[in-house]
Length: 476
Image (tube, helix red, strand yellow):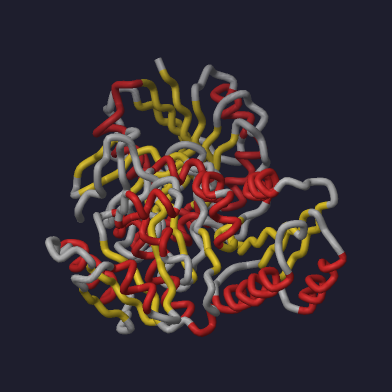
C-alpha cells in the first residue's frame, strides 16, 4: 500500500485533502503533519487519513515519520522560512519529494534527483499564457514538463499545410504524434497529410519546437523558410562561361537582397583565375564564399552541401539543371532556374493551373510574389476544366494574405506557345516528379512539365512531397 507524507502548512492544503478524500482515498495511506487546526477540521473520521499536529521546526518529533517507508513526501508550506527548514531536514531521504514553491524570490532549491518542484507563480503564468490566442500549447504536467511536447494549430496560410508529417520529422527531427481534426483524434500513418486548421501534436527538443512553431505560424515574408534559411549557388569554373557566371551572380544578389534569407552561399569548384572576381562580393553583407580545391564533381558537391548548409533555395541555370535534373529533384529543395531574361525586369509571376498539387505550394507562391513585389497571375490553360475548387482556395488565400496584386486568367491557346511569346515573366511550378527531357515533353506533352519548354523565362520550381496512394491533395 502507498504511504504518502504531507507537510500541510497552507490553507490551500485543505483543498488538497478534500481532493484526496473525494477521489483517491482508497489507494493508500496519507499521513498529514500540520500546525493549524483548521486544516484538520471535518476530516477526523476519514479512513486512511492520519493527522499529526507538530511544529515544522521540530524535526526531532517528526523524525520517526521521515524514516518510515513512505513512497512520496509533499512539502505544502506557505511560510518560506518554514518550507526551507523542512526541505533542508529531509532532502537527503531516498524518497521522491514534491516541493510546492509559492514565492517568486526564493533561495535556490537543491538540484537532487529526488526533488521535484511545483512552481506556483510559474504555473499560474503558464496557464494564463495558454489562455491567450496564437501561442503554442506545451504539455507541462506530463513527461519532463520542459516543453518537449507541443500542440500547434496549422493556419490556412502555413507553408506546412498539405505536407506529410514525415516532412517535419525529416527536416526538424521532431516527431508528429497525432493530429486533431474537426474535434476528432486522427492517428498518423504513412498516408497522412497535414491540412489547414489541423491541430498537430509534436514531440522533440524544446528549443527546436519553439523555432518550428515560429515557422508554422509565419505569414507571408518568410520564404525560403521552411525549406531552409540560405540561398545557395554552385559554380563549376571549369564548365561555366564568364557571361553565365556574371548573370548568375547578378541574379543571386537580387534574390539575396529581396528574399528573407539569412545568407547567400557561393560554392566554387575547379577554381580558375576568374574566381578572383567573385571574392569582391565579400563587401556585401551576409555572403559566404567557399572555394573547394579538392571536390571536382558538381553532383558530389551539390549533394554534400545540401546536408552541410541550411539551404532553402538552390540557384542554377538551364544547362546545369538539364544535366543534373535527377539530383535537383532528389534534394527536395526549391530551385531557381535562371532563364534568358533579367530577373529584375520581371513584371509578372505566372502559375499554370493544373491538378490540386498547386495547393501544396500555394503559400510559397504568394510569398515569392510578395517579397519580389511582382504581380501574380494564375493561368488556366484547360478550357474543359475551370479548376473551380483551386481558384476558390487561391482567392481565399489571397484574402487572408491581404494580397491584391493577383489576377486569374484563362486561355484556349497552347500555353507554351502563348507564354514563350511573352517577355519579362517568371514561372512558378510544382516540382512533383523527376524532370523530363525537352524531346520527351515535345513528343508526349504534359501540362505539369510545361516549364521544360519555357526555359526562356526565369523559374521557381517548388518541391512537392507526394505521399503513397494519394492521387491528389485532399480538399479543405
